Length: 184
Ligand SMILES: [Zn+2]
Ligand SMILES: [Zn+2]
Image (cartoon, rainbow, N blue to C red):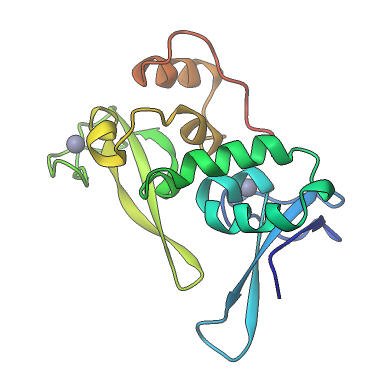
C-alpha cells in the first residue's frame, strides 16, 4: 500500500517523530513499510511536519500523489526537501543542555560539557527510531554538512521554554528572534 495522508480517526496514536499524541481529526501521515518482524506491512503514524523532517523521502513520495488533500503541502514539501538535502539532517531529534559531562560528541569525540547545548540524534532502523547520541552545537556544520538546522531543532524541542528557545536560536546563529513554537 502507498503512504497516506488522512484525518486521524482517534486520538490514541502517538507520532513516531516527536512522541506526542496526534489529535483526533488532525491530518496525519502514514508511512507504509514492510514489517521487519513478520509478514506484510506496517504503518508508522506521524504529524506531517515531523515526518517531513525525519522521513523526507516518504513524504515527498506521498505528496506526488496527494497534494490536493494536504492543506500545507507547499510548506511540507519545503521542509522535506530541506531535510533530504543532507543525509544526516533526518537524524535531528531536538536539542538540550547536556545534563552531565559524560556524553561524547558523535562528531569530534570530545566530551560535551555539562550545561552546553547539544543536538540529539536518532537513527531510523527496522521501522524504529533509536537514540544515536548527540553532537556539539559547534560541530553542526562538520556533522550535518550545513549550519542551517534551526527549524528542525526547534521543532523537536517542544519542552524548551521561550528563554531557552531564544538562547538556542542565538547559539545556532539565528539572532535574537524567537522562532514560532511547533505546530503539531
Ligand atoms: Zn510529531
Ligand atoms: Zn563535537
